[in-house]
Amino acid sequence: MKIAIGCDHGAFALKNKVIEHLEKQGHEVRDFGTYSTESCDYPDIAHDVAQAVEKENGTGILLCGTGIGMSMAANHHKGIRAALCTTELHAKFARRHNDANILCLGARMTGVELAKAIVEAFLTTGFEGGRHKRRIDKIPC
Image (tube, rainbow, N blue to C red; front, side, top):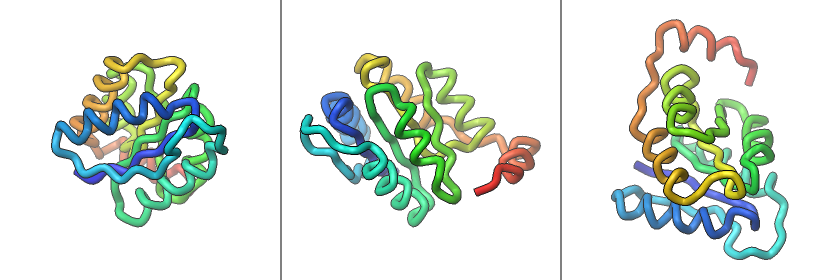
């Protein structure tokens, strides 16, 4: 699977751990930065990842301190359904019922092992469609 990933400075370390995990799983990862702990603006990264997901009809992962800013910025893009997930169950339902295409994680809220488990739940759960599709179609943008 091709996965676009990005973070702000607050999530740099966790992003690298997630990338390492994804690559071990055989996924193709495209890293949109940031590439250091130097302060940066999370919307810039969110927009780059969201545009890549839009263009490729793909999957993305965004990380910041809480995950809130990234999810807010990404959800301003047409066709993006970014979901901030703090548990594996959140990730499963974000995919099953909401067809989320970007997973958002908070590095200051989520440890490495939990983040890996959330990522796995997100990537291995499919969309149920049906009544959920009808509801998603009512979301503007």
